[in-house]
Image (cartoon, rainbow, N blue to C red):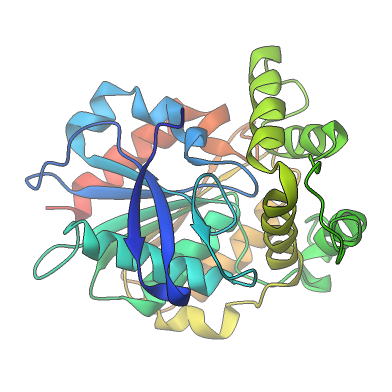
Length: 301
């Protein structure tokens, strides 16, 4: 059974949004929202759930994006903006945000540009954002020239394979896809038990016709999303961008350019983590958790 609970919100005609909280909510503590990476789930943050020092310092809540984990909606089409709106509605419904109550948001890869969208849509609810291993651009020639991956090319064959008018009740993502994601996210040398877990998790979560539709839309969103460069000057909260030097998807060079675009943030910093993978909170939890405690301790009073 999943470790998530469900909160209904009204966006898109109704969403059953899945979230995970390792500890009961304590209104005396600041709250950190965690947003997972492409075709993973809230289980991505197990290292953070078990860190006593981190949980003593803040509430943790991970909300699974549209198309991910146990979150479900009837709408076949959705975007990252829809997930950002959903997250804001979930936090309101749980009374984690409201008059005088704001949150921090951390997001890995696609979660990173969700943090920014949330800060743009609800600046009165967001104290600060922590993007990990991400990009604020669309999948552009500019980012590729700086050493980032070619997302549209890497995902095109899967999008085409997952697009059909036929019922696909026996659908299951191929193990090659799961290993591709694990290699670029957790690292080619990640432990065997981690690889085995995520192969099983990805195959199970995206089974059947509904699973095919969700993974297809998640891939379309990733490959064909809009960029945020012209909007970054509207982010007025502190930004702590953490990026691993071994990230094969988005480069440190790109992060170095984009952190400078948060021109109206009172404090926009980039911190690199030597040897850090794309899913940085997994590969280097000590460094990430330490930075979180310091950043939220500073701005979460």
